[in-house]
Structures are given as C-alpha cells and as structure tokens.
Image (cartoon, rainbow, N blue to C red):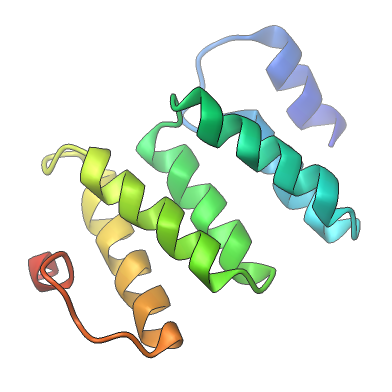
Length: 113
C-alpha cells in the first residue's frame, strides 16, 4: 500500500490511478468501507481512465460486487474509444460479468469479435 500511496503523492502520469490499487489492497486487508470510499471518490471525480475503470471493475468482481463491477465496466466501455486497446478487454470483462449475473446479451456484447 505504501508504494501506491507514494505514487499518489508523486502525482506523475500513470495508466492506472494508484488509488485503484489502494482500494484493492484495502479489500484484501478486509477494510471494504475504506476501499469503497476511494472507489466512490474516483467515480465522483469522473476522470478514471479506461484502464483504471477496468481495474476497479475487476476488483469489485473479485470481492463479490458483480453489479458494481458491471457498472464500472459499462461506463468505461461507453467512454472508451473503439481504437483504444482497453476497449476489447473491457467488452470481454463486461460480458463475463453479465454472464455471471445471468443477464442476456445486449448490444454492447455483440461488439465482441
């Protein structure tokens, strides 16, 4: 967690916001309330990169919040440029979450080739 915090303090460019790593670590340390506060802050700021949103979606799914993971993955897919390499990965993650939730395919699912 110290490394992630140093990255936050540094403020330099990063493909994934280090706060996403802090949130994941907090879940690992059985501090889900703090993890969710960080995730909510990232949501409210609205500046998460597709890679950050993908990381958060995977973290939420790993800790049992499929619906939250789906919301992050969906918003990221909608905000992500189709030529961004993260786009296909997000579509696949979103599709997997939807399957786990027992949801039928939708228009975004049909974009996976």
